[in-house]
Length: 63
Image 1 (spheres, helix red, strand yellow):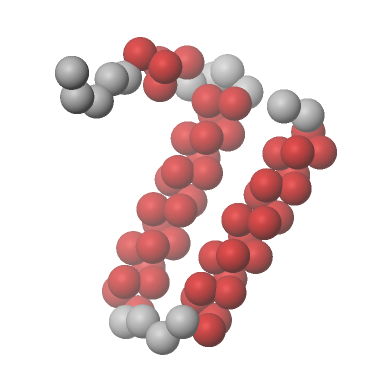
Image 2: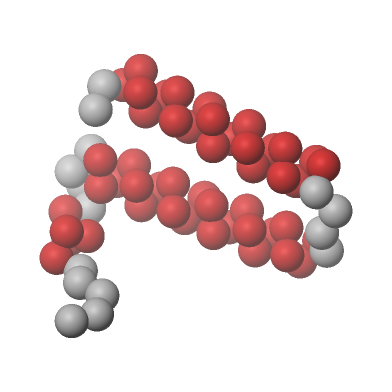
């Protein structure tokens, strides 16, 4: 994955999160939880895509 694709995905995720925060009426606590979840998922995805978090490939859910 090229650096351009990573930056483009980060911009899209950031804009989508901003749109959700700005225009969808939710309780402040729910917005905070949503923001934290999105940031954690993006950080884990970045670490995995750059090979710094290779143990993600060993995680299996279910049988």
